[in-house]
Image (tube, rainbow, N blue to C red; front, side, top):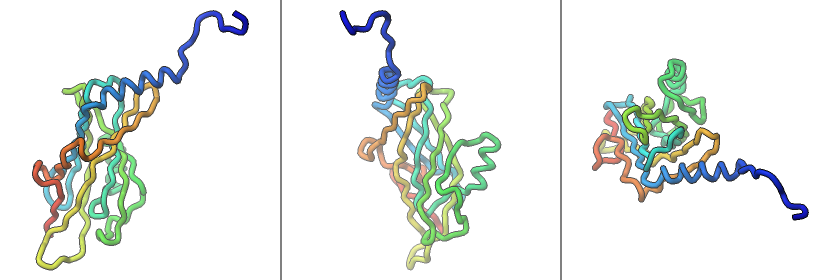
Amino acid sequence: MAGGRRGPMRVGAGLGALLCALHVQAACRDTTVTQELLKEGFHRDLLVKVELGEDAGGCAVAAQLRLPPGIYVDPYELATLQQHNLTKAVLFPDVIDVEAPEYLARDLLLLLFLEPDARCSRCFCAAVPVHARYHRPAEGTREALVVLENPEVTCLQSAGNLLKWILPAHLTPPVPVSGTAQNTDLHMRN
């Protein structure tokens, strides 16, 4: 066979990446993402949990959260937590005016790296402190409404191949940020 290849053939990195991606996609099928605000008041903890559809052995999971202007993560507090290995996160932008009221603040993007749950091989979770901002005074109410969107979840396989998927809102129940399934909004009282 002229011009043909002889000897053992090697499976290219592309095929390895495809097989890895298929494994991660299989784990994503029945994925559940929840986020919950713990504690009361203006200073709370945002807990994010991801349960993959099946074991995705060796997978690292991160959640990308868009924080509306009504809440923020304090970059100094985040740096302290990271120095003590209590959380892994990246905040965009990394310089924030923590004193700004809600109507002068901008959305923030938080990339939160989740830790595996020792009790469940398909489960990952992480928590980060969040703080409510002061809002404009409103007539007839002492509450302000802040709505958190569903996070975008990313899975990084140990081989270094990145596969990203977004869970559409219709696949997951509304995000219970107040601690109850019926109420999906953060209510703050002055």
